[in-house]
Amino acid sequence: MSEFQAMKTSSPVAPQWVERILQWPTFGCLLRVGLASAYLIGGIDKAMDFPGAVAEQAHFGLQPAALWAVLAIAVELIGSVLLIVNRQVWLAAGALGVLTLVAMLVANNFWALDGQARFMAKNAFFEHLGLICALAMAARIAVLERKGTA
Image 1 (cartoon, helix red, strand yellow):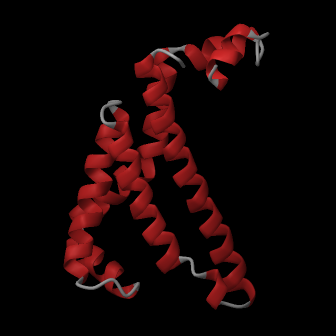
Image 2: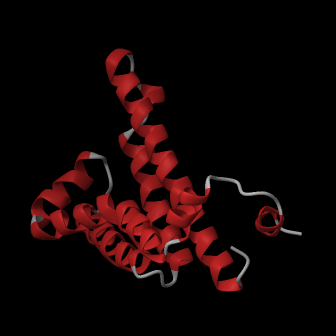
Image 3: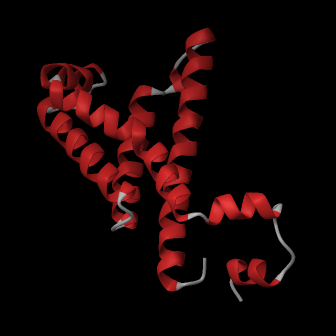
C-alpha cells in the first residue's frame, strides 16, 4: 500500500477547510504558477536582454556563454509553461531542477567563501535545494494524480 493510499484510509491529515483548499483544482494551478514564477520571469528577462544573459553566464564561468544563455532561456520558458499547464511535469521539473543545480553550484559556492559572503551564499544554496525538492514533489504529485493514487 502506498503512503497516499494509507493516508486516504486514515483519519484526516488536516482540518476539513484546509483539505478543501488543497483539493481545489485551481489551487494546484496557482501553486504551479508560483513555483514556476521565478523561472518564467528569469527566462523572459534573459530573452529581452540577451547580452545581459550572456554576461551573466560568463560571470559565473559558463562557456560558451551564449550557448548557456540560450539553454537557460529555453529551459526556463519551456519548463515553466509545461509545469503551469501540468503536462510532462516530470520533464519540466527535471530540466528546471538540473538548471537550478548548475546555478547553485556555480553561483552559491559557499564552501569557497568566508564571512558574510559565505553566509549569504549558503542560504541561497539551500533555498535552491528547496526549489529542486519542490520541483521533484510537483513531478511526483503529477504522476500520482495521473495514476489516480493522489
